[in-house]
Each structure stands twice: as C-alpha cells, then as structure tokens.
Image (cartoon, rainbow, N blue to C red):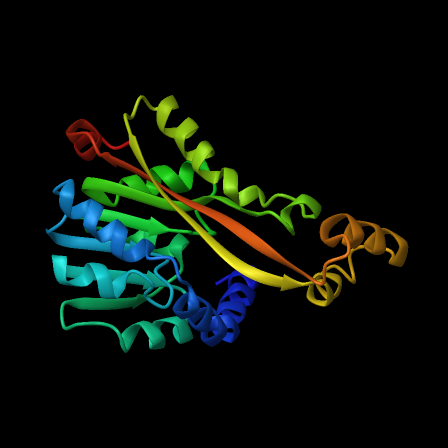
Length: 246
C-alpha cells in the first residue's frame, strides 16, 4: 500500500467514531427515502449488492434486508468495526482499498452502489466501478449544501460538482442514465457569538465585525435555514458492456 493510502487509512480510522456520531445526529432521512425509491423502481430486492466505500454502514440498516448477499467494502478497519454492529448475517465486510478491490474483484453484482465516495474521481475509476455490476449502478452524492448565514462567506465545495463530472463521463460513453433528487431543509437558531467564533480564523477583526453586523444587525440571534440536496445517478449497465468491457 502506498504512503498516501496508509495515511488515508489512518485518517479514517481516527475519524471513524466522530464520523459515526455525525451520521447518527443527522436529521435527514436519506437512507430510508433512498430505500423506498429503490423498491419503487424495482431495483431492490436483489440477489447481490455492493456498497463500495461503505464506511461505517450509513445505508446498511435500510438496505441490507433487501439483498440476499450484501458486500460492504472500505479501507478503514475502525469504520468496518462500527458497520459490523449493524450487519445482519447476509453481510460480508471487506477491508480493502478501492484501488485494490477494483483491480482484483471478479464478481459482478446485481447492484453496485457508492455514496459520497471521496475516491471515485476519474473516468477510469468510474468505468471500473461500472464493471462491478451486471445490472444496476447507483451513485449518490450531495449536490447542494448551503445555508442563509454561513454560505455567503464560504468557498463552495468542489465535490458538489462530482455528479456533473460523472454525467459527462457516462455521456461520453453513450451510457444512458437517470437521476433522482432528494431535497431537505432544516432550521436552527444561531447566536452572534457562535457566528463570530466560527469565522474568527478566516477574517480580520475589521472584516469579521463588518459581516457580523451585515448578517445580524442589532440582533443577537438569527434563524438559519439549511438546504441540502442529494442526487442519485442510476442506470443499467448494457449487456454488451458486460460481455465486452468498457
């Protein structure tokens, strides 16, 4: 394993517990709504299901009962320990890097799924992912994550555009795909003090005072609204690609 992958594994091992807490605290029912959609589309149930870069098993409780065999692949041992506590008997947890799994795996799955995968970036990686499936490919990402108070002063996350890159790759291969968007909003009260602490390292004292005044005026609290959109890209791998490759 390369130094980069070793460092990546260490990072996710150390972050695993905190990551799981964040996932558990999320108020957005994306896993349940994704499950319902896949059932409506007759993508589930299936015989074999791959959850690539499945981490601590965010989607495992909602999806595992609809697959006879469910493989969850991740490079982090600590993430997989958390996933193990959620896994039924039909789930196989595989500790392997995505690079190694794509290069060595010989199995074709009825459904190949990957959500918020930070390692799925290039055309070659996407096409290798597609070749894991003999049926459906599912790619789920956040494509919109903004709010009224903080976003105007933050740089946009480039990963929000990854789905557009995937679409370009698929179109270049003449692979038809469909999309489904899951949209959520939430509200919370934010204090003036919290806002200033949040941006304390990003702006000078003068600039921070200016944007705080612009945002809060004479108020000590504001209601902040968050907008979060997930987009699912889903498509069937053509039989010709299964037989002849990409």
